[in-house]
Length: 348
Image (tube, rainbow, N blue to C red; front, side, top):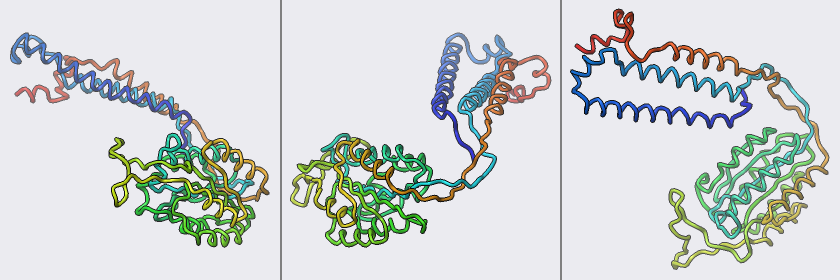
């Protein structure tokens, strides 16, 4: 099992394509200048030791050296042991509404991004608790099974968008049913389901489904995002806005937050409704609830004894740089005799 200590150094890899572009531009400039000076046959006689192939090979060796040096800065580490550890925590499942109405920009930057901020900041405040993520619109899908890997949860969360579901709508009932399959620890007494939505299009029977889930020991908290005055739903193609969603009459659709619907779901499941327009409010309230909840002990497997691997990449990088120093761009006499690159043959 590998992990990266300093992934930000990967940005340095942009140096490699920049150097390739510079090399090609310089090569093009040289060829243009040479053509103005003399024709190809005369240049070959004037500079018989010039080798484009060796110049290219020298660049490749240099780039390989730089690549391995950059990877050494990143410092990949390898876990050498898989051990079972005991942790204490609760199970928390986030059900994120990714319907098109969540793209409304009545709160900045939009409802969906606000919901993601709330989940990310809540996860960052958790300890050893396990988290899972469900996304739903017209259908419900498991985005991430319940896990202790909070970094993976945040990574998967950033990719959540309306295009990930096959149909539009608000299938909260499906999300509630799917949440039941997430709580795979029968000994866990504290289970939480956090629903984040604008409350639009939720069905009345959802309250009964939520109550059934509460009877199984799941506490449901709902977080509403968006304004009650509402806003239009922007339509975008390749990131550029082309207008707003319209109904069958050609009028712009205004989507509104429905707090009463979300309050009803929370009340039916012995939870509570939280206004999510100010990010810190739901984050603090959920964190306080989790902190005061009774923690159950569970086992999980993880790699340990991570050892640095940077030295291998550092050695490879330095080796390629040393080779590059002693690697000449021009033809050498002994290489010319050996004709290692078949350059004489290519001339003929």
